[in-house]
Each structure stands twice: as structure tokens, then as C-alpha cells.
Amino acid sequence: MSIKDWPASERPREKLLQLGPGALSDAELLAIFLRTGISGKSAVDLAREQLSHFGSLRALLAADLNAFCRAEGLGPAKFTQLQAVVEMARRHLAENLSERCVLSSPQAVKRYLTAQLRHRPAEAFACLFLDNQNRLIVFETLFQGTIDGASVYPREVVRRVLAHNAAAVIFAHNHPSGVAEPSRADHAITQRLKDALALIDVRVLDHLIIGEQEPLSFAEQGWI
View 1 (cartoon, rainbow, N blue to C red):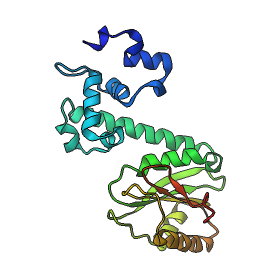
View 2: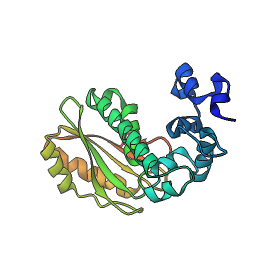
View 3: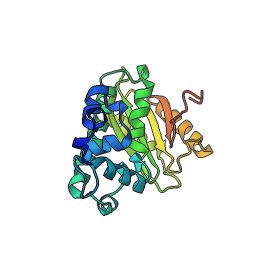
View 4: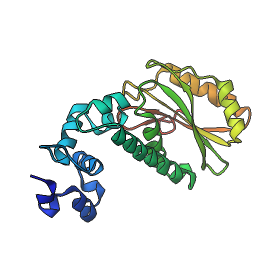
């Protein structure tokens, strides 16, 4: 049966307009993006099949071009559209941070950093550079590592802080294992960076570890 033949309250588009996007399942949201199904499958059927194939919505969004295009009913055009949607979402989160003091919205900071880092297959160390009112200047990935770790150089961090004329920073890195537990190396590099930046009167407000669940905040744990 075509989606057009479904009751209006069950059609994804009509349901979104009536109840809002939060009321839709992952499959219904993906079906709206896909727009059409394929022979013998509605857009919702196809969406459910692809979510099952990739394992989750996040895994589908993180799939590379080759993996994405191997899936039935998908292709380069859909891949580029989906990547554009994901990037718009990231930029929207960044605009929200740049317009307000980040300290007034720690959850927005976590959402933004999660969107930037959680999908990456290897460890990356990044920084939010902030002005003297704790508003976002820019986000940068400073170091890329293997799945086991990233080499972080305080001298390079100081150089980027000075380049952006930042007054404060928030560090973040991802754990591809999904476990947001800090290692001794994580604690050690945080202290080294704090000491280096204190020499130029730049504050380290937090260091977040991005894993599968809620990000771990050094500040909330009392470690900064």
C-alpha cells in the first residue's frame, strides 16, 4: 500500500506538521528525507530496511560514500543531500553558541561537540576558542590520531589561541570505543595545557570526552 493511501495521522509528513518532528520515529524521519520508496517498498519500508542494515540512524549518517551507495535505494545524490543536511545542523548548533555565552548553556556545548566528534572513527582533539564574554569564536580540530589516541602539543595549542586572540577555551576529544572515561594521559595533558595557557592568561573552562552516551565533563567532575 502506498503511503498516500495511509490514514493522514500515520503519514510521516502530515504527522510531522501536526505533532512536530520529535513525534516521529527514526524511520519516519528518514522516509521524509528519502521522499520515495522503490518498487514494492514504501519510503517508510525502505527507511526501516536501511536502519536495520546500518544498525542505527547515527551509523547511516556516518557511512562513507561507498558504504552508503551499496545500500538499496540509495546513491550519490542522496548521499550529498544527507551530508548537506548534517552539515546544516552542525552550523545551526555553532550559530547558537556564537550568539550566547557558552557558560549559560552547557547542554548546547555538549550537543555541538557531540555532533562534531562522536561520528569520527579515529580519535581527534578539538577546541572551542572563546572571546572574553565566553562566546564562540571558532571550533577547530587541532590533532588527529589513531583509534588509540592523539598526540597533543601544548605549543601548537598556544599558537592557535594567540592566532584567534581567544580569552578562554574548551577542549574536547572523542573516544571511538564509545566509553567516555578519562585515562591518566587525558588528565595529564589537560593539566599541561592549563599550565601552558595560564602563562598567557587564557582560561581552560572544560575538557569534554565524547563517547557513546552523555559526554564527560572535567569541570562537572571538579577536575578543572
